[in-house]
Amino acid sequence: MTTLNQTFTTEQKEYLAGFFAGASQRGFSPFLGKKSDGKYTADTESSSSGAEVLYGTPVDDLCKEERIKLEKNGLDAYEDILRHAESNMMPDGPDVFRFKFYGLFNVAPAQENLMLRCRIPGGIMRSHQLVGMAEMAEEWAGGYSHITTRANFQLREIQPKNAVKVLDKLVDLGLTSRGAGADNLRNITGSATSGIDPDEVYDVQPLTRAMHHLILNTREFYGLPRKFNISFDGGGAMSVCADTNDIAFYAVRVGEGKAVEPGIYFRVQLAGITGHKQFAKDCGILIKPGQCLAVAAAMIRVFIENGDRTNRKKARLKYLIDKWGDQKFVEETESKLDFDLVRMELKECDSRRSIKRHSHLGIHPQLQEGLSYVGVRVPVGKMLPEQMKSVASLAERFGSGEIRLTVWQNLLITNVRNEDVDTLVAEVEKIGFDCKADPILGGIIACTGNFGCKYASADTKSNAVELGDYLKKEVEMDLPINIHVTGCQHSCAQHYIGDIGMQSVKVKVGDESVEGYSVVIGGGVDNEQAVAKEVFKSVPFTEIKPLVAKIMNSYLSQRDAGQSFVEFAKDKSVEELQALAN
Image 1 (cartoon, rainbow, N blue to C red):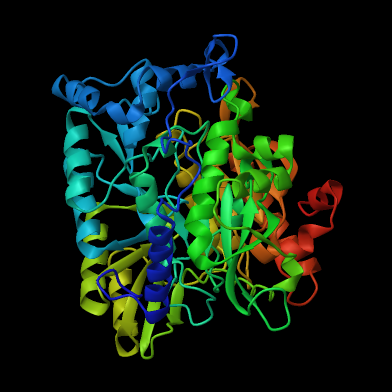
Image 2 (cartoon, rainbow, N blue to C red):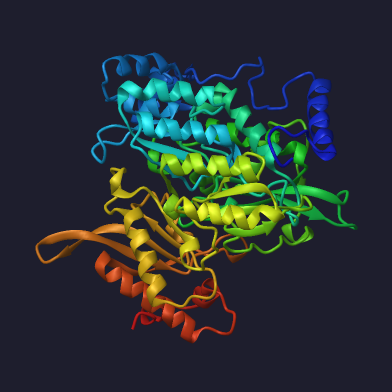
């Protein structure tokens, strides 16, 4: 399936037909985990002692956010949003938390207005949707948009009086922001080249969309102990950083002579949270494509029932897995399913093909003969309305009207006829972007920073652009390198998976407090999986630029032939990495 208006492939039809036929024959929903009476509710119950409990936790012990949700579900806050819009009033108190259920964030004091985060399953959108987002940005927001590391859009500087207009237009465009913040399942990511990658194992696009709609139509999924990320990796050339998610589904092939029928399956990894220096780990099960949604739903419900609701710092899935171990979690999941989970070691599956770095940029042949996709570099993900409209126009003129956002803060224009590629690339350059897979600029990622986030202590996007321009002059890089710049400990730019990562801090220089960064080195994802080590602490940004240039030039002069940066840094101690700057 290459565009949203095309029919399903034979394989996808068989999957969907079998999936729903099986559910029908069983006589109940395939998404289990409900109570014996068929209900599933977040209402409190009474314990044996008569005290009110929520999923076994005494109400008196609940943290502040859980009490807010118990008093009033965030999904029921739409009338409150209407009331605030009528008086042009920013949300305060519990409403600050509840408005996030509609993707609306009070980002004061960084900006005295609202930020909108939407949901775009798998990052795939149509040209008219991009035009509509551009119109929203220029009419009701700050005149720009940001592509995020979850392959969706954020709009900023929205006055409260315009909040309802933004939400309504999203729906008119066929988009939504429902559950884009707070304790909810965030935008579902999937391989950006699903259905068009010649080397992929499985087209995960139908799974990302099905998961998206399951979430939208399942009310109990809006009451998790904390936020939750899910990703589907189709096994192709481009990384979707699936192993940084709470649940990661990886498509794999199983050959002849194994304990299961040969064919395509999925492995499941659990509890990725790289801000806490942890990747998702394989939990030892093998599932069929048609079982992915049922397994995901069961796992979500196990988390809902057993996650910590007393301590926000211990409420992510990681901490439940730490407490139980992954096998107990799998057993609890299996108890909610009407089929047995197959245990099989990962080594019994065919090896995943290696990721091709920076394949989110440049020109690449598609599975479909005569067509290519073109990766467009959007510096640190920032787009102006006219640029958004121009990209939408190019997608219509040269492609199929489809635009795909990636977790690398850029976009793809797909289904471009090979004879039109050069013309498209020239047109992209006219609007201020480029399609070059530059080894330095192509791997720079940055979060919003203190320009629009109250937690950040530096203007990360501006700093990242300035750093990239400096490095281009000082370093002759010949292999792709990833540089991630994040504004705080929440690590929205995932600095621990960068070859070079930076987290902003305030640094004292004399009597002045200036923007600076702590530097980590040696991170990677997928087949290069590694958590970067902290090497330099609290370095003023003015010193960061020459410092990073020295590190990169030392790598170029000391590496073995063809050795990647992550391989070069992997076995070095902190002291050895510090010496690279000398």
